[in-house]
Length: 281
Image (cartoon, rainbow, N blue to C red; front, side):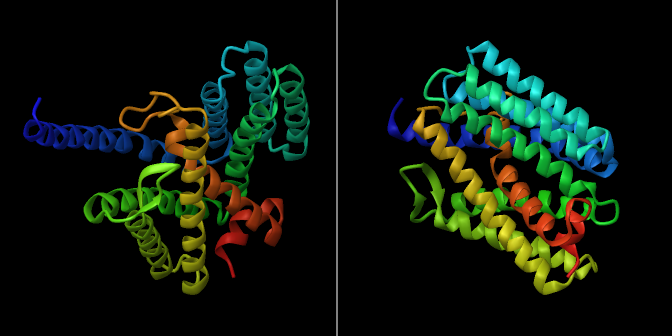
């Protein structure tokens, strides 16, 4: 194929990939929103399955997936944690988490740090997702704000990066990401936050600051996952989601944003008021 023929082929391939991404998003996004609205054990089941998927994919990325005892112990611990969280026993959830981490450390081959980091990564996403939604009054709107900010940061970054191009953000870690994409995603997150404020869902200043912080956390989470994959020479964490790669590829920004949000809300209003801690000032 000549250079002249390759360019149109690449454009056509890009269009097909974008179409697949859009279709997958149109299926996954309403499902996530519906489960978030339902809350309770339904949301807990969804995030527990997601956490298990994240853990397994992490093991695949770092080359530990064939260590079945390590994989099984982590999966069982995350499932037991989800069971405790579904029953509303957040205190009891600490037991399987501690035992699971201990089992992963003992059973994993050296170096153990990467395996343990994968379990902590998945567990943090699981617990933080439940804590943000736990608030019966503000949990849903806090979670929807977080989800929308993460999504538009990714979408805005994609189109701004493709449309504008320019200097790379961190070429050694993520060759495709540009400063234009980072700014585009950031601006998109501010638009979402401003929309929430216009609807009376939070004061303008704090909501804009929250949207900005979540967008930055999301982009840092994306870069972190890219750095892990680059470290182990992996392009995609898996091919589970058409057009998106694996769960780690799709949830990298969400994990960082939801963990940051949970910690911040927890410090402000405690376990039962994480959503209020994010939305009420």
